[in-house]
Amino acid sequence: MRIAINHLTRMKPGYICVAGIDLDTGRHVRPVLAGRLPRSLLRQEGGVFEIGMVVDLGEVRPVGKAPETEDVSFEIKNTRIVDTLDDKQFWAVIGRSARDSFNEIFGDDLQPHGRGLAVSVNHGSASLGCLRTNTTPVLITAEYFGKESLRVRISDAGKEFGLSVTDIRLYEKDQVTLNHAEIQRVTQLLRKGKESLLSVGLSRPWLKPGDNEPRHWLQLNNIHLKTNLS
Image (cartoon, rainbow, N blue to C red; front, side, top):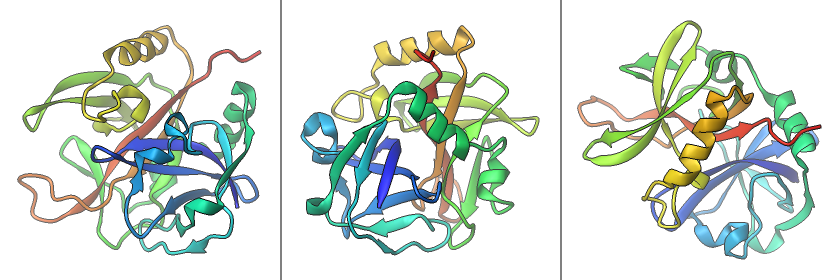
């Protein structure tokens, strides 16, 4: 299976989450292991995963369950980079996958909870997608649950929401410290009106402080900007 990588997110220090678009079907795929994916699988660390890479996962086996229907098991030893998409090719691939609202991606099981959106455990039919928005997302750094965090303010269907941002490119190598220089660069491009497509996804189940049950919370996995295209 060949996938174009368009989701690359930080997890706990030392671990990552990866997903891409199956070039044969146009569907999102999340390669998973029995344990967590180590950071060593990033291309910058000697691995194969990087935004815009086409990676052959080898033989995979579907292991998903609602809402993480995209999960497939794979073997690291069978993965290899088979192509690198240029900006124009990458934009075309993610553009074909993009939808105009969160509910188009995740269905009616995605519901507002406070300033965010979430899906109940064992509900929903998708956990990954790309969003095309007609408003400019706004990146915000603020203290959240006692630590500096990166969030995005975004409008959807006439309502404004605040989502966690997990784009690994916006963090330092420790995956905790914010990369303020890169955040500022992206912010300036957004303010200049650069078109963006957003890779969005649901978290693994998490019990938010003060909530009464774990939920899959919507987060912004990656920001893709339409730059350097002829």
